Amino acid sequence: MGHNHSHNHSQPDLKGRNLFISILLNILITVAQVIGGLISGSLALLSDALHNFSDVVSLVISYIAEKLSKRKASFQKTFGYKRAEILAAFINAATLIIVAVLLIIEAVERFKNPQEIESNLVIWLSLIAILGNGFSVLLLKKDSEANMNMKSAYLHLLTDMMASVAVLIGGLLMKFYQLYWVDSVLTFAIAIYLIWMGFDLLKDSTKVLMLFTPDSTPINKIVNEINSFESIKNVHHVHIWQLNEEEIHLEAHIDFNEDISLSQFDIILHKIEDLLLNKYDINHVNIQPEFGKDDAKDVIVQD
View 1 (cartoon, helix red, strand yellow):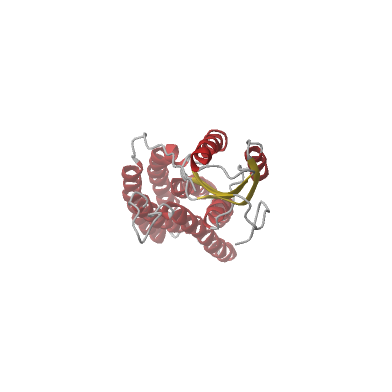
View 2 (cartoon, rainbow, N blue to C red):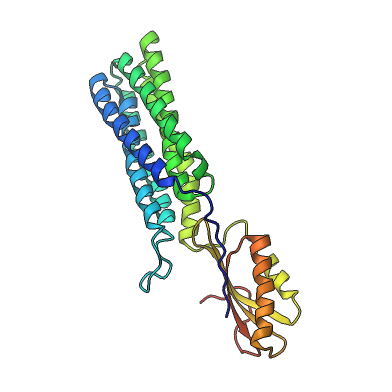
C-alpha cells in the first residue's frame, strides 16, 4: 500500500486578519442600518441590515473554520479539522438562501401595504454600507478564488454590497419621485439574487461533504491510463474524493500480472503518483496491490 502527499503553503496567510477586519466593519454597518431602518421605516434598509447580520455570522463561522483548519491531526482526529472550511461554506450558503426566503415574504407583505419612508437617512446609510462592504470585498477577493470557505464569506459581502447599491437607488427614487413601492420591489430583487448566488455554493460544498468525485476528475480516463502501465492487469475498487480545496484523494486496488516484489511495486507506485499529481492534481494516493485475489474487479464497487 502506498500514499503520497503534496501541498503548497508558500503563500503568506492573511485570511484570518482580513476576515477579522471584515467582521468589525459589518458589525458597525449592521448596527447603523438597524437604527436607521427603524427610524426611516425602510424595509429595504432593514432587510439589508438583516443580510448584514447574516454576514457577521457567516464571517465569524468562516473565521473559526479558518483557524480550526490549521489544527494538527491527532489519534482521535486523523484528518484534523481539514473539512471545517467546507462545512462553513455549506452553512453560509444555506443561510444565504434562508435569509432570501424571509426577505421575499417580508417584501410581499410590505408591497401590499407600502409605507412612507425617510429617504435621506436611507441614502446616507446605504452609502456607508457600500463603502464598508466594498472594502471588505476587496480584502477577501483574492482568497475567494481558491478557497470555498472564503468564497462563501466573499459572496455574503458581495451580495450585501450590491443590495446596498439597490437600496441607494431606491432611496433616490423615493426622495425625488415618491415611489415608495420601490422599497419592496428592490427587496424582492435582492432576495432572488441571494438565492441565485447561494445555490451554486451550496451545491459545490454538498458535493465535497458527500465525498462525490470532483466534476473535473475523469475516473474512466484515469483508470485507462493506469491500466496501460506495464505489469498492471486491472484497476478496480476506485474511490476519488475531495477532502478540501487543497487535497484530492484517490484510493484503488491494482491487480498485477505477476507476483512482483515490494521494490518493483514502489517503482510503479511512484510513476502512478507522478501521473495523478501532474496531470489530475490528485495529491493523496493510496494503492492496494493484489495478485490473483478473488474479488470484484469493477472500477466502482459499493462498499
